[in-house]
Length: 476
Image 1 (cartoon, rainbow, N blue to C red):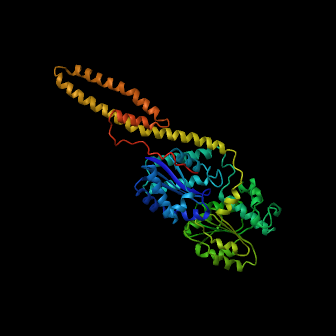
Image 2: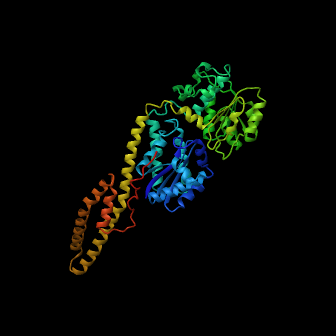
Image 3: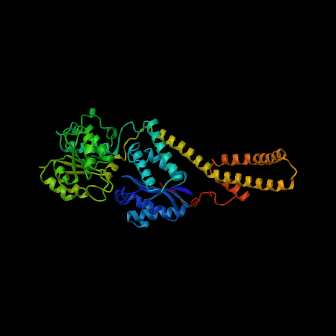
């Protein structure tokens, strides 16, 4: 058995493909069960966010597992494997561990160091646990990954800036509104060009990824904001716009109780999804992240809202994947749409925390420790089998000896049998301790294999990992 990670992310695939690859919470159990029903996959976890869709698995063989996972991704996307392959990356064993640890620490995020990914990995792991498709090696991997993620954020300052995709998006929206409404916000218009479409270079500043603080002159002062979606992102968005000085904030959600909970926490007003057309007409900024499989805001809804606004600008911030907002709305007069693709462009040159190297060192150390423990655990069944085999041999030989020496009393027999057992224990002690030590080094599985061959141990103990061919190059 071996660990395998296969996926695509914001670096390897366009947003249009990531949108197709997204796996919703409702779809996750079926996809997980389909994976473990395949010939070569025994455990699986799906991590699907706005920046990535990745499948982590414990597989019987590398090539068989890769084929099963790739086929599943192809079915999810509805894209032929020949077209999808160029966008996939594959990580095996140590690289799979390193990749997951880097992901959970925020090192692989669009906004390096953001902490939201830690919660997303936790949700993905819990979904796999609920589906009963992970309990062994993959479960141990994710438990360790979550611990490493917590360490990264508690022992370093990688997320000290408090930035998130939400806060960056809110800043972009505020700059856009300011560019077209000089009297609406307290941020000088001179800081960006008058055409938001030409402002990407101006957005690549340290303050873009700084937290939204009250001291920032409330960049959304007085703005009306509609939040569509009351999940983790919606709640964070509501908190962020409040800190940015928004005036009226409205939270819309399919489940009224969820909208009411978020609204009450952040002094907002709750409405149902049936009210969003009316609320769009009143809003300056609309932020959406629902997890729906189709558009929540249509072109026709926005066109109707624009007609009654008297030229007042309207900004949409779409943080969902698949998209919540019809991309065609950006063609309407007075409308700006900021989506995941726009955020990716803006953040491509953003500065990152100086603590990145510290987190990378932490990840490297944790990966080494995890792999050492994993190799030792693989050898343990062989050591147990060897000792069980030796105990059986001793028992059989002592039984024969007892029949040949019937005149020995109990005290004499205990001395003989005890001596035999001590001799065998001493003979086995050095090789079993040494094989456990050697197992912690790369290639340590070969020593366990040698023990199985030399002592003719049962073949139902774990075999060595089926490794990929040398000509396979792992791509990132």
